[in-house]
Image 1: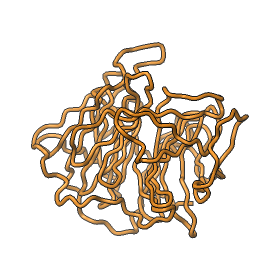
Image 2: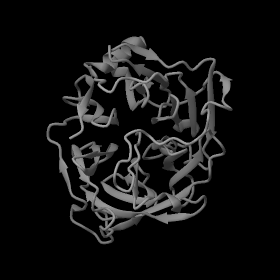
Image 3: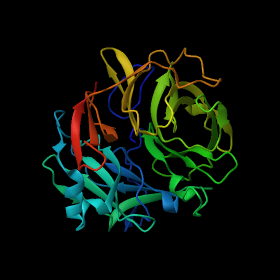
Image 4: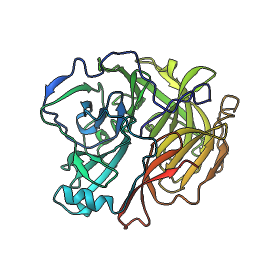
Length: 365
C-alpha cells in the first residue's frame, strides 16, 4: 500500500518525492519498538519504514539503515515465500498471515508485515526479503524510531462484524513530506483521512470523507478507504482512493483539513462484491495508469488520462461505470502489489487460495 506521485498526470519521476529535510531520522529516539498488531507498511525517505499498528492506533517509524542504492535490474522469484517466512519464525505457514508488503525505493528490498498466529492475540513481525530468498527479521530493539498516535480511532470493542479498531488504519503512504493515513474514526462520519508532517509531529484529527456509491445508490460515510495512491491533476495533488464494492474516488489533498468534511468524486464503479487490495500508479507508452489488485475481480489496469474531465457518478448504476479499464488475465491470485521500479512491480500471489504464496517481480502491463 505504497504510493508513487503522478505529476500533472505525467510522471515527472518514478521515485517518491522527498522533502528538503536534511535528516529524516533526526529527533527519533533510540530504544525498543513495541507493537500490538501487524498492519499496513510503507516507506519514507532514507530507509525509514512506516508500520501501522491498528490495535494500538499508532504509526511507528523505524530507521532500518537500509540505505544502499540498488541496481535497476532487481528481480524476485521466491516460491513458497510463506513457508520460508514461517520457518524463519519457527512455525508453520498455516499459522502466519502476510498482511502487507512494501519495497524500499533505495535498496529495492521487499519488506513484509506478518501476523504470527491467528486472531486478536497474533504477534506482529516485520521482515526483510532479499533476492537470494534470505529472510531477515527487522530489528526492533535498540533502534532509532518514533511513534505517532492516532486521535479518535474506531472503538476497540468486539461486535457482530468484528472489532472496528482493526480498521482504525486501513492504508498508509508517505507523499511529498507527509504521511497520509486512511481508516475509521469513532465519529459519526467514521471514514477518515489524516495527515502528519514527517519526521513525525502531532497527527491531526483528520477529515471525514463521504462518497456516492453508485452500486449501492447511496451516500456512504462509514466505509473506509481500502487502498489509495497519489497523483496530480493540473498541478494539484489528489488521492485516488478505492473502497469495497468497488467505487474509485478522487479527493483533492488541499481539501483534507482537520475536523472538516469532504465529498470525494466517484470517477469509476468497478464492480460489486469485491474488495480492492493494493494499487500503484505508473506511466507506460506515454499514458498514465493505475494497476489495482482485487479480491474477486482480478488485477485491473485503469486509464487515468481522462480523469480530469470525467463526470462524477451520482446516480445508482447496475454494475460498472466511469473510467475505462481492462482486467489483466495473466495476473491471477494477486494478494499484494507494490512498485519495484519504473517498469516493474513486485507481487505476492497464490495459484489457488490454498496454495503456497510466491513473491515475484513482474513487468508493469
